[in-house]
Each structure stands twice: as C-alpha cells, then as structure tokens.
Amino acid sequence: MPNILLVSATDIEHSEKEIYGVPIHIVGIGKYNSAINTYKLVNELNPDIVINFGSCANLRDYKPGTVLEVTDSVNDFYAGEIYKYTNLKLNTKLNKEEVRCFSTDTFFEKNKTYPKPYQDNINYCHVAEMELYGIASICKLNDIPIYGYKWPSDDGDHLQWKINAAIGFQNFKQIFKTRFL
Image 1 (cartoon, rainbow, N blue to C red):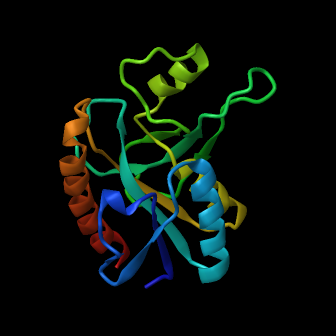
Image 2: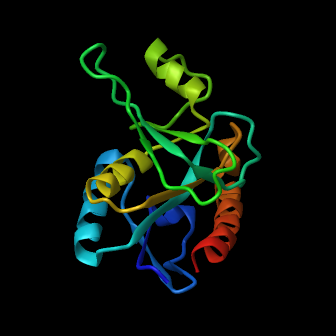
C-alpha cells in the first residue's frame, strides 16, 4: 500500500480519526489554511499520494451524498486582466466524467448575485468548496499525485447538511477501500 496522506478540512464532516487504519489529517477550512497545513504534513510525512475528501456545494443537480471524483480544481482568485482564473488537473482513477471543483474563499450561496467572471466559473464548474485548490497547489509543487473526492452535502436546504455529509462520508469510505487499499 502506498504512503497515503488523507486530508479533510474539518472533522465536523465525518467525526472519525481514520479510515481503515489510515489516519485522517485535518487541514482547516479555506485555501490558505489547507495549503499551509498540507505543506507541513507533506514535509513531515513524505506521502506517495494525497487524497482530499469532503462535502461541497452542489452547482449542478447531483443527489446529496453522491461521491464525485474531481478532475480539475479551479481557483476563485480574480484580478481582472492582470491575472486570470487558473485550474489544476488532478490525478484520477475513474476518468469517467469531468468534474470541475470551484475552490472559493467563502461559502457558496445559491441565490446570490456574483460578478460576471465569478459567475462564469460557477457555471463552468460542477461543485464548489474551499480547500482543494490549496491542497492541490502544494501537491503539484512537490510532484505528489493528488486525488479529490467531494460529495454535495445539501441541495439548498442547509438543515440537511449534517445528514447528507454523513451519507457522503460513508459512500467515500467504500470508494477509498476499493480504490486505494
């Protein structure tokens, strides 16, 4: 088995310390926290691969709890003509469909009005969350394969988040066991 670094933003999404003996490391919420803490973990643990998992906002019509393997992480940083949005390709095991994840620094709100370039990325992507781009940046910098698994945890009803996050985590555990152990 490869030396796997398994990272999650917060234990609120799963409340477990490990999956099948592989420790879950908490990297914090947001691209900055996740990048800094992934950097520290990569230097300390020297992993062969990094796997990020967690809940996300649903930008399409996925059933809450459905685990998606992310193919691209899109950064929400925008500075007009000076700097364009960027995406990072992730490693994939399935390669069935393209799943683009919009990594933003704020919670996505379904009925909010966003500036056009930001809204264009929302329309381009399938899901949104706050950590994967930071984690993927560190992995690319260190030439470590990165896999991202996200599950929509609500369909606009935030009261269902905890229930759907738990369903998604159970589904992810089965995928993790099948594909990486």
